[in-house]
Length: 242
Image (cartoon, rainbow, N blue to C red; front, side):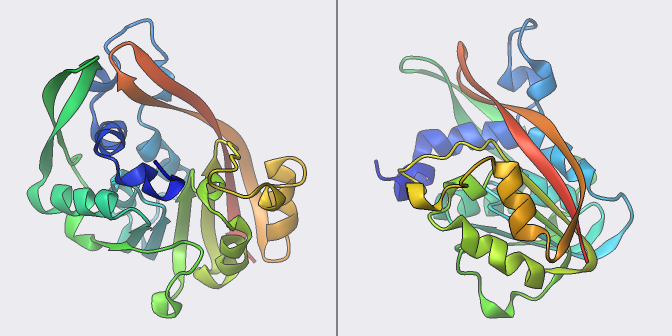
């Protein structure tokens, strides 16, 4: 499987739908497990101000949970992902309000589980589209809030997105970036990785147009099957457009 095909795979799609929309016990059946890592796509949206605003943008939106969470305070949300399978799933959840998926238990054993949109989201306020974060359409406009969650280290040219960000975030607007800093050559050529720490690279790239407001760590958990999970710690930075 090529890097470009990774997020078109049915197994990965089911894992991400569960990651975004699964209830705690649907994701993690073990009371001894890292429950603080659950709910990542909603938790990171809480880093934005709670006040209403006009437009929000979710880049690398995957199957859409963070975009729906942004709809609670943004009058309009544009959500973009490179994966056609992810965008199709997000639109199904948007239109139907729920979705049945095959959750892997072990080996070839699967169980059908139902996930649903959380209460309070304004589903019809989100516009989903397939697109490339490195080559966004010119008429996208600007936004009060921009989120790019766990996206940078999956781009072949992450610098292109960083160069575009000042034109996407309105003056005084908020930008939230998260990344597990998992730089892999199958996604990003080595000469395009940060030369040192990811945080130092972001500070240098964004300093001319943004003020760093906060930096902290956010755990997240992706279930592969009932006995195997991916636990990761994302670096979260929040910025204000100057």
